[in-house]
Amino acid sequence: DIQMTQSPSSLSASVGDRVTITCRASQSISTYLNWYQQKPGKAPKHLIYVASSLQSGVPSRFSGNGSGTHFTLTISSLQPEDFASYYCQQSYTTLYTFGQGTKLEIK
Amino acid sequence: QVTLRESGPALVKPTQTLTLTCTFSGFSLNTSGMCVSWVRQPPGKALEWLALINWDDDKHYETSLKTRLTISKDTSKNQVVLTMTNMNPVDTATYYCARTYSLLGYMDVWGKGTTVTVSS
Image 1 (cartoon, each protein chain N blue to C red):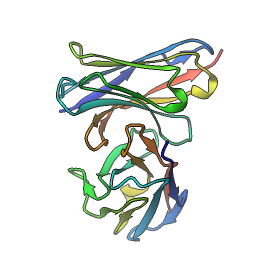
Image 2 (image 1 turned 180 degrees about the vertical axis):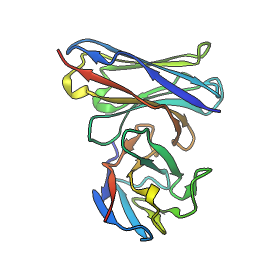
Image 3 (image 1 turned 135 degrees about the horizontal axis):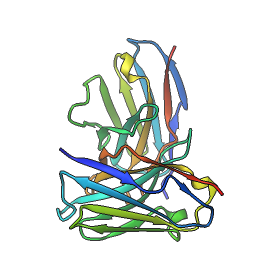
């Protein structure tokens, strides 16, 4: 199975900061990479598909990049509602796998 | 509007079989490319994909759990059912179902989840 590794596991930042979360795949997955946001006690929310396409309704301060084994999720200017956990997920094979998550906290 | 809702027991005993139902609306599992996935999340831990069923009744399972999982669909009722045998306390988690697009593999709409505790 394809392993997904996110870094960092946790991150402290301030409102207005630019932050980047990294996701690496154990083998090439082309651009079959999706990102989700999850707030405590809530279901995940889909943000980005095929590495860089924004889901409808997601603010443009979110962006994704990458291909092969290295991917990033960037939030250009953090807003209070962005403090949450973020997960990457590969869909290169139908044996989907998620990263271990990155918790974004307020500094 | 697309919605999904998970239902099932909140508490199961070790060795028992868990049966969860995902009831959905706003889309059809008869539509080419449409799928439903199950994902779980133990308390304080990461998301774990479990299983997927597609419009063509093709099924896929997480490798380490595949001997314990069965996914099925009833398109007339707009339901997907997941069974997990031989439940163990480590299976305590919130279980989610999510609409999934087969071609690109993303889960765009999720249910609120149902919490299952495994304890004697």
